[in-house]
Each structure stands twice: as C-alpha cells, then as structure tokens.
Image (cartoon, rainbow, N blue to C red; front, side, top):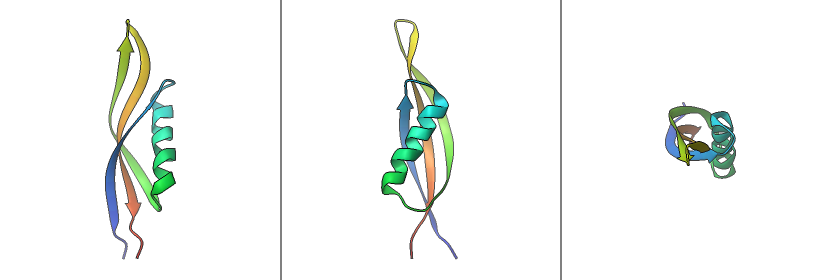
Length: 67
C-alpha cells in the first residue's frame, strides 16, 4: 500500500504557461522524490505597460512517501 502527499507550488516563465509548468516540475524534482503527478490549479499573467511579461501557474505536486 502506498501513501502519497500533496504540496502546492507556484512557478513562472516569461515564455508561456507550459514552460511555467515544466519549470515547476523541474524544480520540484530537485527536492521531491517519487513525483507521480501534478494538477494545475490556476493560471495568471503579469502585465507591464499593457504587455504580458510573465506567465504564472499554481500547481499541486503529488508524490509517494518512502517507507
């Protein structure tokens, strides 16, 4: 039987939402072992002078706890 934990993270990228998600997963994988999935909770953008300058995502990261 496995037990999983869920943690929330926020990530960003100047290039797009997909890149922000990939950056979040890449960074989470540096310190979390056993990642089995993610859930994108929300998306938003940072705007400066009428232009999008950053894409941001809030995510849940699911990982299995080690025994």
